[in-house]
Length: 165
Ligand code: ADP
Image (cartoon, rainbow, N blue to C red; front, side, top):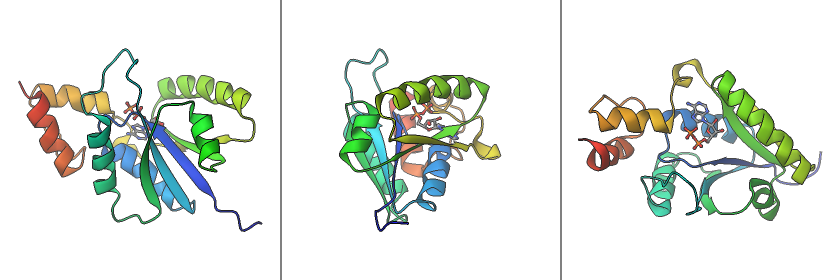
């Protein structure tokens, strides 16, 4: 073993962060010295996020305030390039369903091709969050569904403000 810090990157769009993301981030924080929650900040994506980059970052910072080894940062480059730039050798992703597996397998292979020294670890979603996605929460909020147990309190409030019809 070396003294090198073990840094993990948890990348995503986090539009907005859910309790499922927080479960993966917390479990990653228990295994690594530092966790950087990397929030995609690209304006050319087909689907524009509901929340701007600053607000997505602030939701994460507030929700992870009790985890001293976790911080949130925006990124607009390849995930592996971001990982290299901050000295991380591990990307951590959550897997919910078979559909996640297929997508992540492809992404994982492509990332390995780009940067063989950065590996990806996959954590299985906890059962109580295995159905939970940001897009599902947004859809629920749009039609006035109950989202209070799915996202942090401030996120629920802001989603209702932005989306409730
Ligand atoms: P989403 O798929 O909800 O839009 P992101 O693009 O922000 O989320 O995904 C970031 C990471 O979080 C991905 O690795 C995704 O698989 C993981 N993730 C999202 N929701 C959950 C959940 N409920 N449980 C475990 N992992 C999750």
